Image (cartoon, rainbow, N blue to C red; front, top):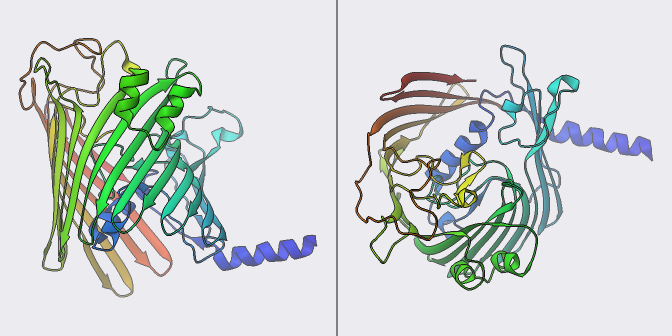
Length: 434
């Protein structure tokens, strides 16, 4: 019996193991390749899918997903080993793991577990894992990993530069309607459990979709009737806060996307707070993106603007800021900023070598506002003024050029990210990641 098991698993390893030599950063590898492939390949078919993008992908065709291993060495010989394993119990039930073993915490981006000094500081963690139940109309998933609340990459709500978290996802959809529900457990703050609940209600057609999302950041000390009301997928979060809790950070978002031919337009409007009394500045944000073709090459242009105090909360309740420990969860530019981003994709093949290049340029103007600053008043009180500048205080301008490249030869892939960033009033930073 033991001999048969050894023989069976040996055959599995020989048949399914694939070694990838990689040159990429611990987080950039998965985020950038996934983001660029999604944003450049969205069409009238994928627009009908959920607006949510969890960071796991699985195949229903193989009962064991190919095991992948990658190695990365630096000056002191740091290394990491990545692995992916998937088991499909049936056509509608899948178990997936993506794990990493490394001898440096820097190579476990998002690791918040215990720090160990034994066995050369080697540690292991799951970058993502999921137990997924899905059918034609529903997906229920218990996950560990990162989440983005948009299939277009960076957006006005939850983005993938957050820490790895445990979460539960429920997706419902039919020919015309969709519902996304996420429960995301963040790191505790001052002994309080912290969580995010996100809902999106969507109307879907072949070439366009519109949606409304509500999101709540709240803390709790135990599972009780109030926390259940937040977690329940049928709840409307504003109603829960007004009638039962009174202590959460609620945001709303309206989104729209439309595809015609090879062109695509999408937009989002975020409402963090809007004072009907006109005694506090509006906490609003928005972005608009456009993809068109220049010859055979796609070009994507996005413009993002976020007002000061967006994602923030009263100084008396800093635990309700839209942040997980020291990492903002919203758009990467943060509040009090505007950004213009232009990116493209170039793909060609010569002598059996496939080249994929993703150049991107970002221009950012940032005011004095920050998510880490305290608001001038406690929660529930007016600021005493309504109008404020488009960008407040002294403005810093920054420019960033990034080139993500993938070079494929047979079953091998070489990936690299080159970043050049210049920030006024600070310094010149030159970065090259292998």
